[in-house]
Figure 1 (tube, rainbow over the protein chains, first blue to last red):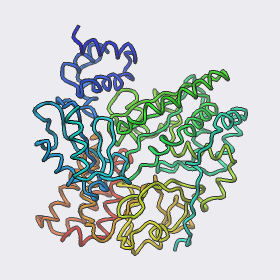
Figure 2 (figure 1 turned 180 degrees about the vertical axis):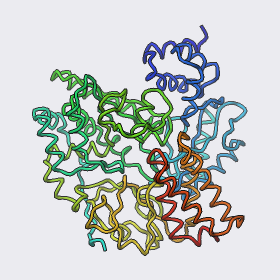
Figure 3 (figure 1 turned 30 degrees about the vertical axis):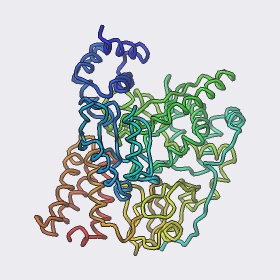
Figure 4 (figure 1 turned 120 degrees about the horizontal axis):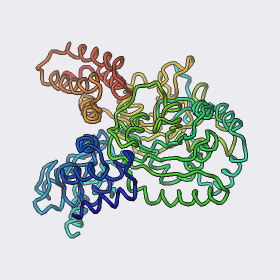
Length: 154
Length: 394
């Protein structure tokens, strides 16, 4: 058994193999792998005994389930109105400049992926972003450079 | 004219009360009928935005016969400019959980879920600790009720109750046709009460202090208090608990920066109110006597005169285009065409009269879209285009 097969089996043992368990199982794979590869989706389908197309169709509905290879740290910067008004672009440019990638890209070393996302529910502390599950608020270009530098050593 | 009403602050929701065990104990001693009556007489309406009477919802679900029923707390707070539910779950989660157990007692459910949006994953571990306290309590008193967290994965539409059920059932979060309503046919086809986080937190207040206390706040048709998420061009962004029924003018006096041009009430799916209408607009549920009354899930975004309303609308439409589930054509194609359309007018590729065509498109969407997302695009679109038409063109 490959490590991913093993992980999927463990998740299925934990959550069950009913259709209601599909999201938790996919989330479990994303938690570890950062994305759902074709291989993992086919394996999830096999483990749960449902068509792989159903797994793919469900996965692609949710913006936190990537089906492209992602970096270890996924930066999701909020682009909705309040963050946009409070200087999101300057923060975004600072990140792009630092990591030399555009939105939707991953650094060649596989460490960072940069994405924009819709309202994070932190409008009173805009602009805001997530790095994996961690929240960062009241961002400025200076502040975001410090945060990213810290992640560069992780 | 709306009745002029000074802002009245309140402090119920975030008041730290260390007596949930006692409150819950008292609730469980009372009969379901008694609790339903208390809720109905408080006139609490759903605080997620739609404003359905909470007591009635519990009543309908309690009257249905079914082996399995569910209580679901909707914590898929995704409306732009809304962040109160996160704060409730962070600061007073035990109020929400008390309410869920109470609801289980009333309708006869043995299982409850908190559908927590993926963006709030960081709340999960603390929340699980509080849940285990409740499970321990329920075990001690031999009450068969379990609460689980179901994590979302980044989809605004899953805040729509039937889309949320679909998502929990492991499917794409596509809204169902209504009726049947969740109280009859909800999660797994079973009778389900689904309430917003804030709604549940209010029931804690009502059960602890009595319906009268809640009813005496606010105005007719809009009883009680409401949390407002204040953001945008304001010197004091944050979460405020205010009595319902206030005039928008008073709100802007309190929270504006002196140069407020417009306020978006109810997030991207709500209405934009321009300065000239502040005095005539009240915040609350629709009533016959209140003039223009705007319901809201609590999102209040202020814009000052430095903001281009075109950029605001462009941002909303991009949001809707991305978050439309794609299931029904009016919404899927409509959101795309509205965005393409306003860009074309702005660039001068289409005449200004094209805006009227787009307004008619939003009317069509309002009638034909399957769920609230597609239906409510018309709210912000028409209120922005009609009030700031010149900014759309030049």
